[in-house]
Amino acid sequence: MTIKKVGIIGAGKVGIVLADLALRAGYEVRISGSGSVGKIALIIKTLVPGAIASENSDVVANSDIILLAIPLSRYKNIDPALLRGKLVIDAMNYWWETDGIREEVLAPGLTSSEQVQAYFKDSALVKAFNHMGYHNLQEEAQPAGSPKRKALFVTGDDRTAVAEVAHFVDTMGFDQIVHYDLADGIMTEPGSPLFGASLKYDDLKDIIDHFDQTEFGKKIAASEK
Amino acid sequence: MVNVDKLEFGIETFGDIVANEDGSLQSAAESIRQIIHEGEIADKYGIDVIGVGEHHRPDYSVSSPETVLAAIASVTKNIKLATAVTVLSSDDPVRVYERFATLDGLSNGRAQVMLGRGSFTESFPLFGYELTDYDDLFNEKLGLYDELRKEKAVTWSGKFRASLTDQEVYPKTEHGELETYIGIGGSPESIIRAVRFGYKVIIAIIGGQADRFKPYIELYHEAAKQLNKPEFPIAVHSHGFIADDKDAAIEVAFKNIKENFDRIGLTRGWAPMSREQFDSETKVGSFYVGDPETVAQRMARTINLLDLGRFDLVYGAGNQTAAQRERMIELYATKVIPRVKEILTEKEAAK
Image (cartoon, rainbow over all chains, first blue to last red; front, side, top):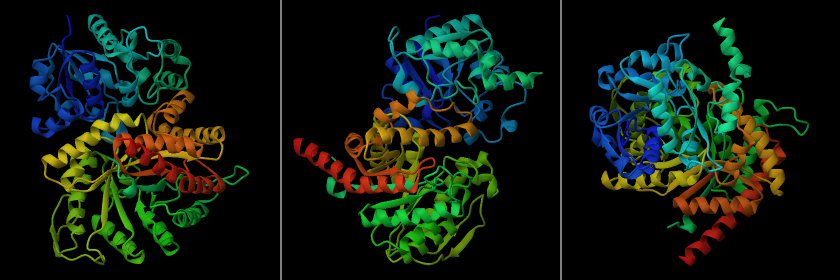
């Protein structure tokens, strides 16, 4: 599939940055907020001119790829039927300040993306854009081959979907470390040394490859026993 | 266009615990008394405003900023006394009004309210609020505060507080209105909300380049025009450290700001700050660190770029010594501020 049209659900800090990157990469961009179009129209027109402010249903119907950039505690506000058959990027994280008590948002023992995938069971979910700070994302996108280019971790269960998202990440200005297991999303969840880090390919790969040797990796391994 | 004559400069502290010269830490009580002394120094050198944060955690000494500001009021003449910020979401707007109106009275009209949602969440469980009500709490309480700020009888009802019927709240201020800012962290919705209430805006730029905020400031002005609301010059708050020697300043700032950010990051699952991140923040980002000339150049650039009306530098992050903190305030007032004005005056003349 050739991705031409990008849909972003969530018009907050992260959604705006992703819209900006997608516009710069030459995509047609639609974006929706939690309320009416009127509520975000001025925000979109001023912050990401060229992006089309819309509502969830229109964003989904008219996009080749959907990015979820809303607070994790609100993904269930979206009807899973709406995203049926869609290629979906999960850019969300559990974030205490906006999501509240973790146990009220997530079941124990499963990564956040696995739970989002279980809810949107008829969509191909790929985790990406979740571990680098939004201002780093905005400031550090670079064309392929640039020595300053940073890398993002991309993982999901559906190999075709992962490959498509990896290519998409490339066009957005970042190298990719690719895994084919959504559960590996744990490696970039809050608490991981990669969460909030902004690293080049080799450095990111090094931590991913030796994740079990990080403090966080050891903690995860211990809790699984 | 920046109006150099009207430009305001502030310092802000979160009440970090002060270190002794031997590296041991002072008590919270000693750290609080140090802030009073620093307020006195800032006033003596003509800094326009001092802001004191509200936190409810062991690494900060101030949970009740208006009390600290009241003490500063009694030893100063001109400096404005602000909170940075008052966590309105977990406070009672009536109490907020009362405390600030009192501060305003005893300081001869120098109180300045800065309302925010706060970037910490300890106050929510402490005062019996749910984090999931984060947005609703702020919206509702801001609505009530806005009524109280008119200093007339208030009739109000909401979800989180007992209703008020034709209720007067005291004391009234001498100028009829408390100067009020809304502190925001850069969410576009927060900007629109501040515009809707017609309040001044102070943006916390605590990561990344100031350039990123240019469209947000445009958004503020566009929204004000569209909603027919007053437009004020934007204020910015960022972290910094100034010392006589540039390299020494960078090392002190790296140690202290990193410690401070890493400790906060730990509770949020945020990776520790790398040297690369810190260096990028000090070179082109949101940390204003170095000798007076370096800091002045960077501040002037930001003020000019974003067309600001006020710049507040956050001092004392981590555990700095009293000497480091006091010298920074002195350099800021006597070297940096005049130099920033000089650079901006030249820039304006060249335009």
